[in-house]
Every structure is written in C-alpha cells, then in structure tokens.
Length: 330
Image (cartoon, rainbow, N blue to C red; front, side, top):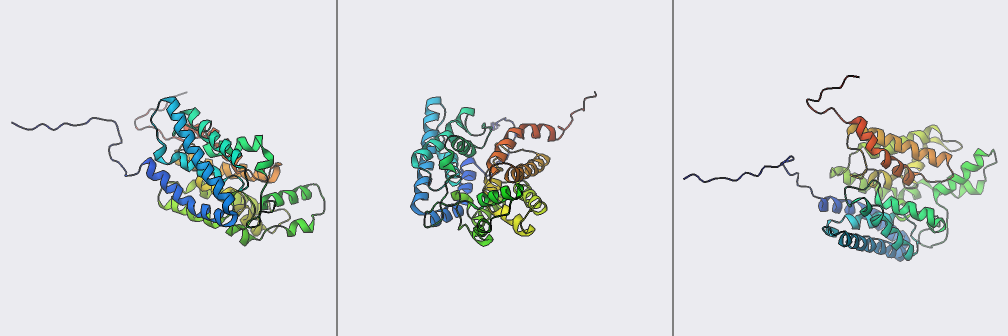
C-alpha cells in the first residue's frame, strides 16, 4: 500500500525569503540607533525622557486600539515601537512629555489604526503626529535648544530662512545673522539646534546605508530625493557659495531622516521602479520649493505627506502590463 502525501494548495508566493515584519522593523530600529545615541549625547536626559515616553505611549496605544477592535495584538512586531521612536526623533528634545504623549497617541490611533492597522495606512504615522502637533501647538514645536546648555536657539534652516527673507525684500543681509550660521562640520556631526533625529547627518547616513545594505529600502528614493535637493540648491544658491549651500541643504534639517526612514516607508511609497523615480524627484522638488519659497524653513514632512497621497496614482500609471494582458483600443 503506497503512502499518500498531502499537498497544500495555495496562491503564490511559495518560497519564503526569510524576512518577516518583526525582523524588518527591528533592523530599522537598529538603523536609527546611531541617530538616537547622538541625540542622547547632545541633549541628555530630556531627550531620553521624550524617547521613552513616545515609544511606551505608541506601544500602549497600539495595544488598546487592537483590544477595542477585537483583532490580533501585534505589539511584538516592533512596528508600534518604531513609530514611537521615529516620532520622538522628529520633535524638539524639549517637547513637554504630555505633548509627546498626545503626539504618539495620534501617530498610532489616527495615523495607523483608523486605516485598519499596519499595511493599510495612507500616510506615514510619525508624520501624522508631527503635523498635528505643529498645527495645534506651533510654539512648542518650533522651540529648539542648543546642545549641552539647553539655551533657546534657532535651527540652521531657520537662520537661512530669515536671511532669504531679507534677500527677497532687497534688504542688506544682517552680517550677525550670517555669522550665526553653524559651520558645515557642526551640521554634519550634529552639534546644532533642531529636532533630535535630524541633527547629525553622519549618524543618519550610517543608518540609511545599513538599510540599503540589508535591502529593506530601495536606494532610488533616498538618492533621487537628496540628489534633487542638492542640484536645486546648487542652481538656486542665492547669496551663498553654491557648493556650501548645496551641502548645507542636504545635511541640515530633516532631509536625511525623511529620505531614508520615512519616504521609503513600505506601505506609503510606490511599488514600481518608475514610480519610485518619479516619487523621489517630486519629493526633492517639493522640499526645496517649500524651503526656498514658502514661509516655513523646513518642507520635508509636508512633502512626504503630500506624496503619500499621490502614491496610489503613481502606482496606477507606472505599473507594468500584466503578462498576457491585451491592450484596449480606444
């Protein structure tokens, strides 16, 4: 009597790559550790308190939402913890803990669970929380402190924005304002005022290259995003030295954390190769336009949120033809 072997019939894919959601989320958290460590070094206990509050709140909000919805509890997949960490890194280190709690809750509840949870959100959850806080509590979200001493200070892009306004109005640029700009080396290393995760370009580059090496993100999006901003800054440098201004636009502000860790979000970014090229270039255009022409010194968050909305449309018009599909006439 021959033994029978049971075959399981299922749809593709049939070969597992070995990757999983917890493993991928864990790798992104690892990639953020250099930026986290630098923020703790420069901003101390206040940064630690904000990070712990944000991560704990995000995990708790995820748990409560999933319990109320009656769905599987997935707080062990690290996605909520990652959202909490990202949110902490895009807000000022002196943000009050009660405001951090509100923001992290918004990230999970409105930015993620309202849409159905992981994989269904339209926008990057961390940026949803940041956008709401900027709109509701702008004073807290635009109050930055210098590293180590905690003295209130303007960000590099904030200073450049003030200089640009003087130049646009035809006024003589204040030499004290120009001299107050941090050096390019300080901007690169992170010894500047700003949100915790956007200060050190070096730490963010290390983390971003790690994600590319692990093949968690497509190099096209961050490369074209950063490259577009660099080229535009080189062409439209205004009163600044061209090369200096181009690198300053890359290293200062939230461009690198946005390009490597938010614009590449698997759920909210395009899935096609051509779509990612269009997406990256458009992000760069929007960011530079907002920085240069709008009243805001920074445009990364709004650029990514806008392009998140356009992602389904990009995917629709850049997808390849299905094998065997006949093109319709007319």
